[in-house]
Image (tube, rainbow, N blue to C red; front, side):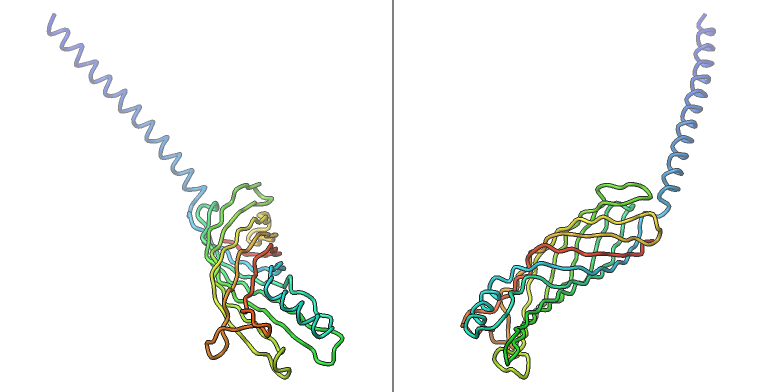
Length: 244
């Protein structure tokens, strides 16, 4: 009786072991197929894109516009406030699984106000170079149609204020630096691979509070107020990119 039980238990153990091995083999095969499918879908997790865009920005410029109003009233000339300018940008992105990217770029902001209807033309220019570093993520994707993304950038800016208000024959220049941020949303096509075209719009918070002349002295308007340039405001870009 004991021998029969022992023999039965041994046979059961061998049979159970074979069943377990088959199950383990089937699970391993299933996992390998799933892993292969994932690897096929994402053969390489990193992607790369380069883009350029042109658009416009709307600037605050409260201090500068207050000064321009004083100049206009004192000289009885037509001199518009400076509230917007043309923007240009270029950036590069490293994408992870086409879902999130690290972005680095360059933007150039233009701005100018010129007096009209006077014997002496007054010119006020406010260009700025802005370097950006940030993150962008795809929040909604329609395959072979469009991607909707949102992003945020840290901005490092160098601005120049040029005017011939004091010396009419040349522009006196003042420069300043500061950091800020911008947040944006964008929509771009994904059906003309590898080309993408799109629209980006967002808000920039960036004010250059102190500017200096060539001798590193703090710059002041003729009224005695300290020069500052505020590029804070909404912006948009029409963009095109190549993505691989």
